[in-house]
Length: 256
Image (cartoon, rainbow, N blue to C red; front, side, top):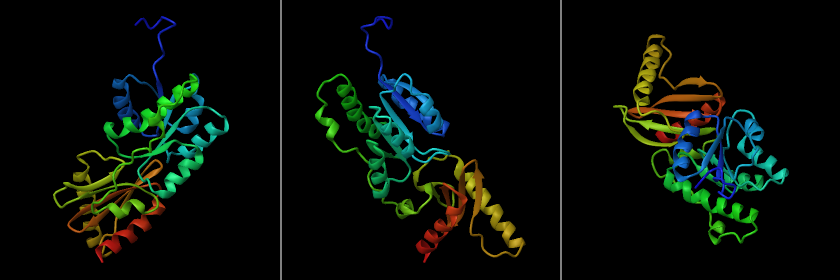
């Protein structure tokens, strides 16, 4: 088809809103091969500045510096813009889903997700929104519930519910991943986790400070908590440094 032909339909556009460049690029790699035109914004505030022309759908992270994805969905609803908003979060519980529904979002996707989880979740809502704009009946599939990643059942399952936890990875003594959820870490990070925990534990021994409880490393608005766990290490991504106490409490309960 000739793209300059006025009768050629414009591609379906999805606006991806996430403060993580790696997440934005990953979503572009999934969506672009499916024929979607992908626009990106690194914050909810910038997303509001990038609404012209209106996208057909918005994929937005819930937890971002400044305005959250929930606030973005509320503002779009207040403006009565017919744009389905699918939110993303490392934790999807009853409270998150209730807040998303109240904000006017069409659903919540649990991070990390695969293309086979993402595409079936967004396509019915896209089709319904496009049909409504064109005055056609919405497809029946639009009423289907949003697929949610199956419940986590590994050793970190209960850590999902701890407030402020965005993701976690459990490594064994050799630095191999035993369990994980939420925001992804590089494959090689187990080596760094073991190194940092070992150095901090050794320093504590020479300082006569007792057993190491954890190491906190803050990057921008988020904090990594590295703690010894059984024979390995646990790396937890926190929304704020103050959330570390809740993780220590969870870990103590697991080891008792």
